[in-house]
Length: 598
Image (tube, rainbow, N blue to C red):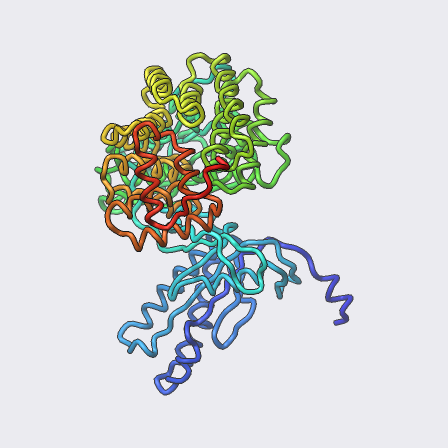
């Protein structure tokens, strides 16, 4: 084939690329008398090949000490990688450590150049480099893979932060993937008729058995999911009285969405095995019928009838996270004027808390677009107030006074549109806390928000934060725990955990503060506030060496931070906490800094 013919066959295609490397393959070959080379070959070619076919993958290239494989989607690639590790562990049973085969796997999803046989380009190189970040028997994935998975359900996802790899100029965001553990998940109407939240319809599940069992578990499962999703402030769940009409109708997803004015449709099948109920659920985009997320879960008959069923908790969490992930992907890839209002709102909320400067600016653009589209709606203005306050709190503002005034203006305009908006009252209280340093005024605003809506989780969270700054640690901890309980499906879970860690710190519960801060960082490895709380708690609990390591991580993320800046920015000056915590950071190695520039 001529070079011209070869180039004419190339085209771009979205692929999930997987590289597998054998750990210390040279050492294994040195033990060839034990059959190591043969076992490597068997594992990588025969076993891997069998599993590849089961997950719709294709072997691109075989090497003596590794594999190059492609899959249609991240979910299929990750499922294969987890099974391959399981097979490797099975084959290592009973063998001496020096002849055991261990694998590192790197996964990346990207547009690559292909002739349908070979793959080329930066995406391929990046997938190969991700293997160098993986642990022995581990999987390391890029952000494009992690964003299409549900943490705690598909896999457990740990954010490794920005990592440098060979032959890639800029650091990449990498994630460690491990098998999912057991997942347990323990409104106000808008001021205008237009509801900016996406509408979700949950239709009764259908049984695989015929005839239908006497106990209608399909109705029970749907009802329980509706109740669980209704705890989310970000989702509008359609009444079961409306969805019940589709119990015995095999209607297309698009038809259900059109009849119920739903943006997403949840449907599924279930079957019984002894005393166990198994459910297979699908979340689909109502307009296109495209399946956004699918999952299988199991629980006992008795448990499914209870409000705290693990099956229902797993399904509700997965549905909520999948909706947010879907909206973020849409907003990142499409022109904002063409998007639905609910996509703009949900994606903006999610992107705002990710604390990537690029995502943060995208959140602002989405909220501005939404405010132009719905100028009489208070919600976009309330979140714009939050956006300006984040610029102050994160130290990103080049004019603290301007952003503070903008936050106050947005929150007050939101209240002008809807005087009973608990969200707007919360954001105004937040402006009093972080900009005006008026803790008493903020406290009163949070109380007003909670009087209107006792289930406003952000009001509970921010009141807890305010109480922390006032030095009332025990009460702060109660409020932040209540906030986390009220918002089990929130996409900014790391933020809730970070504020809870601050409350525990103020309460003197240093071990609890360390635990909550680390949990926050597992969800977002670049959340500087969580690192600050962690370092302070470590110093105050006597772990000075560990705190010094934490401060080094802080300075990598925010090189300009000093103790003087920390104290100056903190609303906790009046209680003496800012000085106390600043001294702890100083002891851990954070420089004092130049006070003349403050």
